[in-house]
Amino acid sequence: MAAVEVEHLTVRHGDVLAVDDISFTADAGKITTVLGPNGAGKTSTIEVCEGYHRPTKGTVRVLGLDPAAQQRQLSKRMGVMLQEGGVYPSSRVLETVRHYVALYDKGADAAALVDVVGLSARSKATWKQLSGGERQRVSLALALAAKPDIAFLDEPTSGIDVNGRDAVRSIIRDLADRGCAVVLATHELDEAERLADRMIIIDRGSLIADATLAELRKGHDEIRFRSDPGLDLRALAKATGIVASKVGRDEYVIDAPPQPRLMAQLGDWLADAGHPLHDLRAGGQRLEDVFRRLTGGDQP
Amino acid sequence: MNVTLVQLRVELRRVASNGEQLLLTLGIPVLLLVFFSLVDVLPTGTKEPIDFLAPGILALATMSTAMVSLGIGTGFERGYHVLKRLAATPLGRPRLIAAKIGSVIAVEIVQFAVLIPVAFALGWSPSSANWLLGVVAVIVGTMAFAGIGLTLAGRLPAEINLAAQNGLYLVLLLLGGMVIPFGKLPGAIRSVAHALPSGALADVLREAMSNAGTQPTRAWIVLCIWAAATPLLAARLFRWD
Image 1 (cartoon, rainbow over the protein chains, first blue to last red):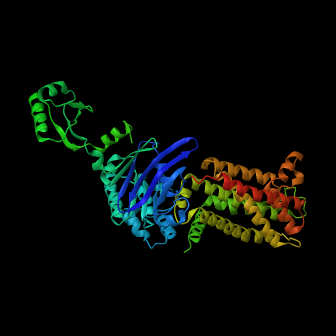
Image 2 (cartoon, rainbow over the protein chains, first blue to last red):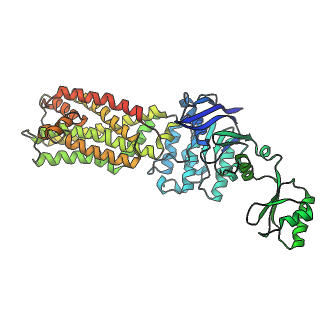
Image 3 (cartoon, chains in turn red, purple):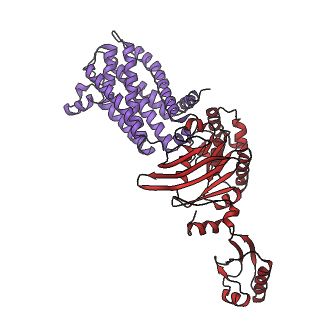
C-alpha cells in the first residue's frame, strides 16, 4: 500500500526550479531511498512531503493526507529526522527525548528510546557535548518518539562510526518491518545499497530512476578486478578478445556477464604475463556505477 | 498533557536555566530601580525619583521579556532549526506560538511580583492607581514589543539578531522616557522618542499609576499602532528556517 503518493510534483523557490514534474510512491513496510547529486531537489521533495512547503504544482498525499493542509493530523503519525539536528545546544539527551515523547503522547518510553539508539551512557550530556554521530542518534530517537507510520530520515548514518551504522541500520530495518514506510534521503550510496527496498534517483529536479536495485542493475553486468597499474589492455584484447577498461590507478572493468570461462581466461592471461589478480568481483554493476550511468557522471 | 502546556513547561525551564535571560529580565530592572531610586542623579522632575522610575522600570521589564528575551531565544531556535523540527510535531506552529506567549506572560508576572514590592519598599506610593488599566497597557505593550522581537528574530541570522536586539534595547532604554524624562531630551530626539513604543508604554503606565504622564492619550495611540502593526509585520516577514 502506498503511504506516500507524489504526482507531477513541481517546486519552485523564486526563479529556481527545484523539482520538475516528478511522480513516485513509497510503500508501507518498505525503505525507499531518495538519491541524487547536491542540489538535485531531494530536500525540496521531502520537505513538501513533510508539510513544510506547498507544491508549486502537482499533488502530494502522505498517509492519505495533504501534508501542508493537514500537517497536524499527519504530524501525529510522522517521524522526521532533519539533517541539521533541530535541538537546542543546552538541551540534554534524555530531557530532549522526553520532551518529544510528551508531544506525541503515544506512550513511548523515553529512556528505552535513548537505549535503543545506544546513548544510555550519554543521557545527561547536552547536545553541544555530543559528537556528530551521537547527534544523529538523538535525532533518530526523536523521529521514533512518534511511533511513526511514516518516517522521513535525512542522512541517518552521517558521521556515525562503523559499529554505530550497523545499529542504526538495524533500527531502520526494524521500523520498516513493523509496517512503517521509511523514506530515507542519503548521499551515501553504500547506505542506499544496504538499506533500500526501492530507490528514487533525482537529478537536476527530474526523476531519472524509480526501481529496485536489482532492476537498476539489470542488463549492466560487469567483471571488476585489480592488478598492476600498467596492464597492457591491447595485448589482453588481442590474446583473449576481452575488452577491459581502466577505471582507477590499478582497477579495471570488463562489461560482460560473469561467465566462468571469461574469468578463467583473464586469470590465465594475467598469470602468464606475471601480473597479480586482486579483488575479483563479477555480477551486477555497483550502485556507484549505476548512479554515474544514470546521472551522466554526477557525484551524489 | 496538552502539547501547548508541555511546550510551555520547556520554554519556562529554558528561561529559568539561562543566566543571561534572568539578568536581562530581572537583574537589570531591579538594579536600575534600586540604584536610581537611592542615588538621585536622574532628572526625573518628581519629588521622589521612585514615582517616576517605577512605571518606567515596569515598562522596561515588559520590553526586556517581550522583545529582547523572546527575540533572542527565538532567533537562536530558528538558527538551530529547533523551530523547524518542532513544526513537524503535533505541537505545530500555532501552539508553539501560544506556548511562547504563555512563557512571556508567566515571566512578566514573576517580574512584576518582584519589582512592584521592591518599588513599594523604596517608597513608591502611586496615587489613585488604576491597576486594571496598567494591566491592559502591559498587554498592549507586550504585543508591540513581541512583534518587534519576532520580526528581527524571523529575518536576521541568530548572532546579528542578538546584537540588534541588545542594541535596540539600549536605544529604547535611553530614548524611551523609561528612566529619562522626555523633557530632558533634545527637541529632535524628543519627537522621535514620543513615537517609540517604549516611551508610550512608560507614559501610559505612569498615567495609570499616578496621573503623571505627559500626553497619555497620544501615548495610547502610539502604543496601539505599534501593537497592531508589529505582530502583523512579524507574521508577514517571519521565516521559520
